[in-house]
Image (cartoon, rainbow, N blue to C red; front, top):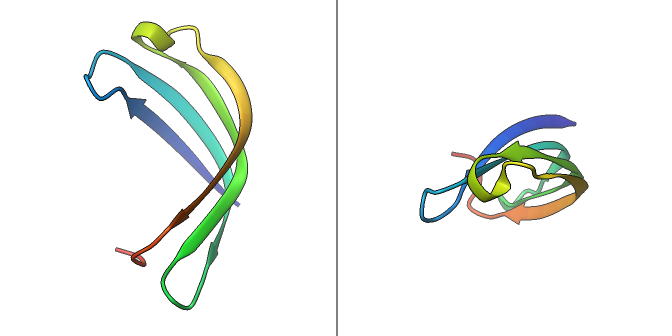
Amino acid sequence: MILIKTVCTCDDGTCTFNALKHVFITFADDGTSTNSGHISLQGGTGDYAGLAGHGVDEGEAAGGLV
């Protein structure tokens, strides 16, 4: 399991929100990877100042490791 702290910024730069991800990452021989795990949203700035919540984060990446 990997712990990832992320700050996401709105496209126009007016707000951010904080995410804490506890994910398991699986790497395939072809250079792709998938991840799955819990995510916690922990406030931010602007419109997201009071944001709080949790859920499941699932994703995939292509292109291998950089």
